[in-house]
Length: 307
View 1: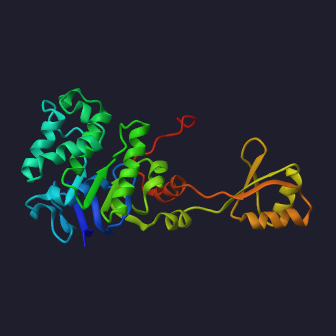
View 2: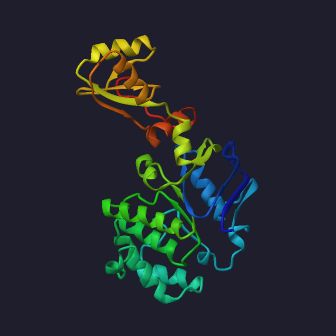
View 3: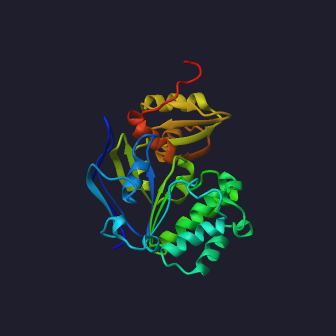
């Protein structure tokens, strides 16, 4: 099985424990979102999995073996960690040709991934003339070069325009549908919610969650109902008698936390209170993520009014 298996992985830099006894598995056939605050250990874990750093203890295996033991790793694993890694004086096509030659990948594959990434028209330009978004596309093209069964992407949407964001989102889904193993690190919660099936969440180097997207949101968020009525004060009183609070959400909309739409509807009906709109309001991935990681955020800004 072409899974990524992280087993009791630890990495210490001086007095800093960047990764702390981390264990999880990334399985094929789904996109796994890799989340956590700055400094949580996501990039370090990816570097350890790709043999770019040595673990203090434990291991990270790809398809049952350390990455460094593969003679032609790009045929199995594609990765984007740093879009600035390509040599600036090379053209985009030459950069990919060097990678292809080192891994015995046919030259025709270079042209295929340039086209797939949308940069075939600028393949003859030097990388140092590329914008961040173009470098990002080149990095993704390099990750796809060997037609890998395992793909690791660190912030793949960074620098991309809206079309590029939609493209990379669909690409990740297509890879997973084809049975490949896809691990994607991102800070963009709303974007992650559009493509991830499963989540692995870190905080200060430790595992905080390893679960499906729906289960994660359900476990770390409260129920909430959106309601609109012509008689908000009567509804407020009816809800208060049942131990609930009606909160203004702007315009004529109000919300009630910790309750279902059916329960609010029943209370309104009992007092003949007219209801114009009533719906359960699902929590967002961002809300659930912030609720879980609040205590593990090492770098947090001070609100302007407090500053």
